[in-house]
Amino acid sequence: MTRFTFLLRIAAIIFFVECLIMIGFSFAPPIGSSLVTAIVDATLLTILASPLINYFVVKPYMEERVDFLFGVRDILSDKDKSEG
Image (cartoon, rainbow, N blue to C red; front, side, top):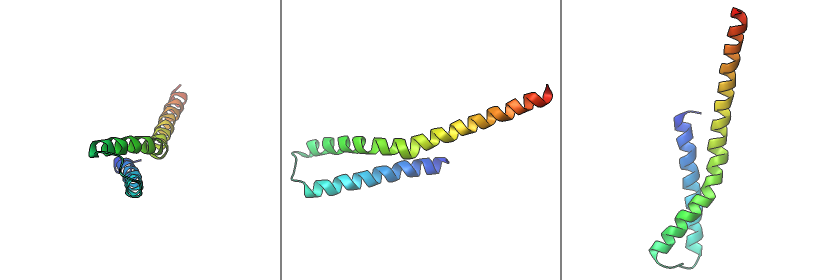
């Protein structure tokens, strides 16, 4: 996964979740001052976006890195066998 793909996935998730939250706010009655609205918005964004970022960004990134490291280990292991 390239840095661009990594950042694009995070940005898309945040954009999508924030859009859903704003749509929800447009249908809901006012919940108080703008400070309360901002705190609720930030809390909802964190709660809803975190699992999505973990599933669609962090998990694939970690799996890719583990596969890479196992590949390096296999290459080094094969090199040691051929030399010894």
